[in-house]
Image (cartoon, rainbow, N blue to C red):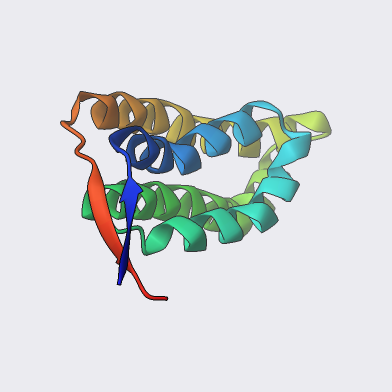
Length: 125
């Protein structure tokens, strides 16, 4: 059996990754559709991280992002009837930004305050 070292910095980066990219995709609206598709791969790659705190931060940020996007899919039609022109998209985007950006920043800061440790992971082969 071989062991592989997962450093504290790698665990911290993985814990922050979904939040960072969700914030960037929310701020740069054309990236949002691409991020909805790419986020599935990022989420699933970090979901079974050997550090349980890394997986926790990934799970919480995924719930937040997918919940906000799903809610906007449902509320998109009522918002469209309330607003006209570009204001429709701005209203939907602003709700998404209000949910994703501040809470994502809070999780990034909170993850940085944790005491991350190096892990030795047993690898078969």
